Length: 621
Image (cartoon, rainbow, N blue to C red; front, side, top):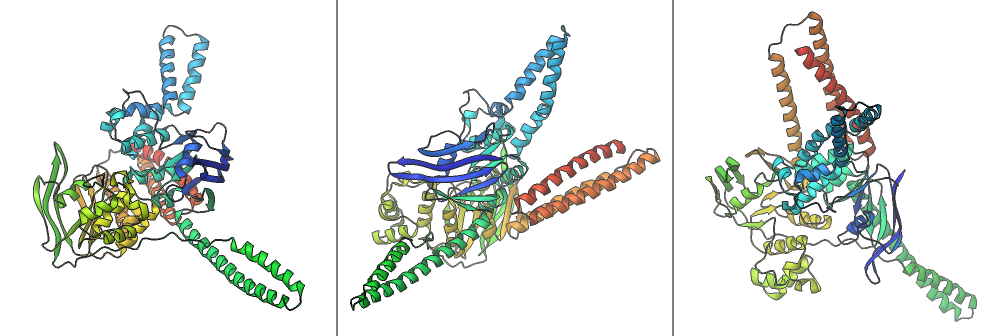
């Protein structure tokens, strides 16, 4: 069944300039589709049209009848006195209405036992059970915990939340509503690693349709099964996840380039032949003129094809200062609190030259605070830290600020970097600021442009310790790839805070995982760290199981003891099957259909396992 049909869609914001120009595609029920394209190509405009937020100029848009559609970036207006919990409960308003009616009927039945009243109560009770009324409190907490909406945030007025927090709450509300079609516009922008992974797992189980716009390449690899690229207002189709899209797009570019080069060679050949025929025709053969004219018409058709252009990459390099010494950074028993809340304590770490460290952890764990301590922008409550004497740092903060927002990008470079006008223009051009762009006030730049300008300023200094706080947060995929190219040539020490798993996997040789006020210092890449973390979880479960077996059991009948032994063997067998399925899911990460089959099998095994756990508990007692 088709959920979404878009045909010959046209949308213009300026007269004669169509942002969508004949866009056509269909999305089948249950599909997961990534919507790709450069910034400004019309991805968000498409989502706003699909949700009915804005109209369009030409074409048709059809959503399957009865299908409920939800857009993450579109946050409804709620009453001023609503808390976050009220917003989450609003997803269950139908169930809450049923619950209120059931309570009214219960009160009436104390004095009235009429058949009609009893029939209504039975019918509504069955509806309440079927729609998940008895699980709604648990489900609300499960989704809130998965997206890290704390109990304190749930009690806060919704209007007092930040933009990122509201987006997270709105995502939770749409998930709880069990929407049929989810439109995800940068869903991971305000999520940390744990919440992003939770969302990916949820989408694998989600039975509805998903359209996602995202700059998170790992998320696109895990969450979508095919991609639609919007290019010059039209749709280009790719039957795979993001990694497939990258390879196939490059393959198509090469094919277009070869076709163009063949056409150019053919044009040269036909041009020479036509000129020769015209020359021979002057010697008395009119037929040769006609043949030459025919060739020139073919040349005219071939000339219409333009040379395919690959996206230009910015070629820039950090100016690096060679590090002399043994230690870049040393911390000893470092501690920091805000009021009664301790972020971390007892941190003793050593960083040596050339290391690439990813500082990861949940939102609010204290990652940015630790970076600010290193940069001497905060003071520790206890302990100390010291940079090596030859260390020269450069810092890209999460929130970019400039000395004067009214200055242009060019004036900011001249004022802050003390460079000559031509050098400033050359450096700005290398970072994509060309022509009139250099005269844009820095206060009017987008988040990604501000990051680019700040990096442009940092790269002009001699540095050997580069610190980045969420460097890819406001960047599109092209800008992220550009930053990665720049960092690939940087050979000195790098410390960065990031939730971008692709970026972490590419650069980190050491992981600092900040959790519960402590840092787990893992020497290796992010993939190795995740495998290590999964092994630790398995060991912990095995230790708990062994501990339970050691606990003295109440003496029961021999038959009960045999049943308990059989139940434990069956539990072990099912747990082993689940582990094997987890490994199989890792091998088929890019095969969405296979992942659905694995997930269904896991769900069935988990149901059986839950029943066995209950039986084991009963027999143990």
